[in-house]
Amino acid sequence: MEISQEPGGALVSYGYRKIPRSEKRRLLREHFDRIAGRYDLADTLLSCGLHFHWRKIAMDRLFNNSDASTRGSKLPAANCGESSTSRGVSLYFDSLAYTAVGGGECARYSRFRFLDLCGGTGDFAILAANKYAPRGLTLVCDLNSAMMHAGKIRASRTFRGKSILWVQGDAEKLGFPDCSFDAMTVGYGIRNLVNLENGLREMFRVLKKKGKLVIMEFSLPVSSWLRYIYDLYSFKVMPRLGRLITGESDPFLYLAESVRTFHSPEKVADVMSGVGFRRVEVERLTNGLVSIYVAEKI
Image (cartoon, rainbow, N blue to C red; front, top):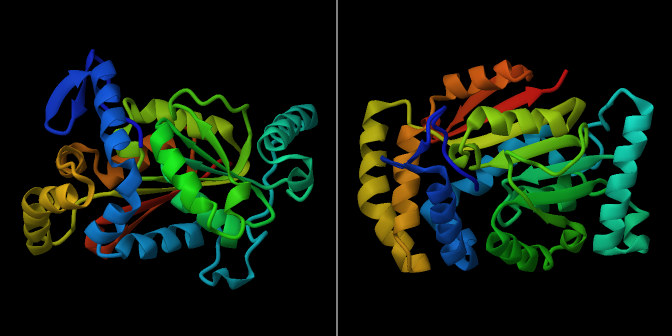
């Protein structure tokens, strides 16, 4: 959850409106502050549970396996090149993990590091810690502390959820060292960036060589008949249901508008390639309601 792109100039897109960047940050922060406690419920009900299916596909693409039952190290630790740099990054994360979870827990981590960026309540991180990479170090980074607080409570009820590290930060100005992560996910986050290219450059910077990125983002249906139905649902039904679930309708109206003003999947893939990612692939799910982007840092 971060902020939508409008290259150049002082104004950025906020749904169908143009507003100053700082104003957009404020509005999004307020939106997520107000719905954080019931965000996961709204996500499940408004997607009719499809988001569970979409996230599983995204994680399967990240970890190169359609059968998650044997996971833990299916995606090998990536190579960052310079050994002294690698040692410095390892010390940074050893210190971070020790501070967050203590020495005893820190000792069990492998060198594999996973980042759930714009992670909100940590859906991808919970999957990684409990199923896909249980021997790795899992982090959530999000701009909104209320969303992460709600996620911590939910994660603590899972087997390995308490080991997840939660770091507040801006996806366009990450505080992590270069070549920090072997794998990274971004769920519903790039649509909210102030500058898409800046955010993708930061993702590229903190990913290790041979590291892998998977982005999941809303897009528009391919079929015209489904797009008509989706428009009715997005503007007439979803804001009302969102208000019943969370007490707020504005965040859901923004969601509907921002999906329609965001870049096409083809344009997003072009920008990813432009900042250095290779083997960029786009997969449309559920007739294009969601697009998954898979890329590597070669």
